[in-house]
Amino acid sequence: MSDHIPLEIQLEIIKKLPIKPLIQFRSVSKPWKSTNDSSDFIADYTCSSAQLQHLLLISYGNPSSEKIYVSIVDDDTFPQNLVSPTHVPASVNLLRDSIVVGTSHGLVCLFGYYGNLGEFKCRTGTAMSVLWNPLIRKSVAIHVPDVDWLGGPAFGFGVCPATSDPKIVKINDTPTHKKMKGVTCSSRWQVEVFSLSSRVWRSSLGSFPCNLVEFDWPHSQVSVDRFIYWFGVQKLAGGTEFRLIISFDLSSEEFGEIYLPDELALHDPMQLFLCKRSDSLAVLKKIIKRQQYEVWIPENGVSKSFMKLFTVNMPNEFVHTTSLPLEFRRNGELMMAISDDTDDSEDLVVYEPLSEHINDLGIKGRCDSLVVSSYTESIILLDQ
Image (cartoon, rainbow, N blue to C red; front, side):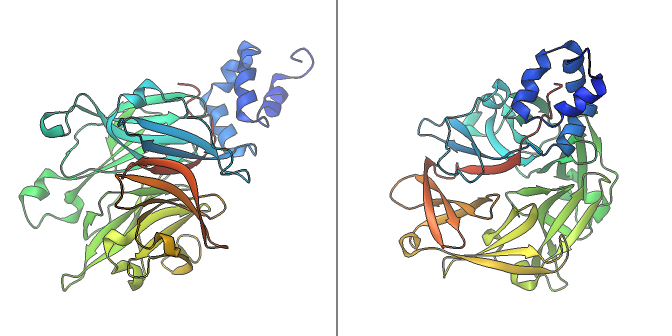
């Protein structure tokens, strides 16, 4: 083939391959491997390939406290295509008290620490973040400096679509603010950005939204396109707190604010959830008395005008259980964790909006351990 077809055309053909044969064909020749492992090819393939599958990464704790990760293709065969646990690299297995920060362009970002549990199981050791591509079994461990274990920080993760460069955002409440009142907004928040291309943490120059009181615990974030989103809290003149959404542009590294309607902004913050649905931002509002979830989305992409899309009505058999929304499937079905008082575990279920039926997926984890993250295949980290 190489004797008759120019390398440039060969590479254009390779770009149209699914990921698994693409990786296999790297061993055909040194030029193919060298080119396929280049950052330019990885970025081009990530942006242009139409062969990429959508997947769900499910993590949960078993009775022995071990964390298990299962990757499932999110297509028409779901949930019949449940597979065995996926290979987990040592950099992920070594993490203690790990959380999934977010997913973007085939990567999963986790945060935890390396080291043993301290006295009373307090967080000690070296704070670490791990970027992991489960499909190609590549990972990168990153030291996270200046971490206040008690008060944060808020984390964000996303891959810049223009450059395919993974970025981690760390937002700390400054020590000055904790000791003094009246600190200006510009000096209250300390924002640092890590990009994989540079391998360094640097202070962000983007202006931070003013009057922000705090990030809502547990600092959950959503990455959509080139933006990372968090819930934030501001105060009205009379002291009333309201919720809004803080955005971070991965390209310009500028912050922005998205204001919510009163039905959401003044709702109990413990019953609001930030999600991604069909490549769009979504807010879930839980109404405990009626055992319902209202699903709200921006009317025109990302705007200040939200509309209620549909309501999740919990069937009668789940009225006396505790539910927690986890992730939307590609087709718009909502995945949830359901638990009751009979044991210290929870079941993974999926809600079908059209039939209003709930299907149990047969996955059970320790209470508060189930996490579901959706992502699209990519070859980012192939050059690592």
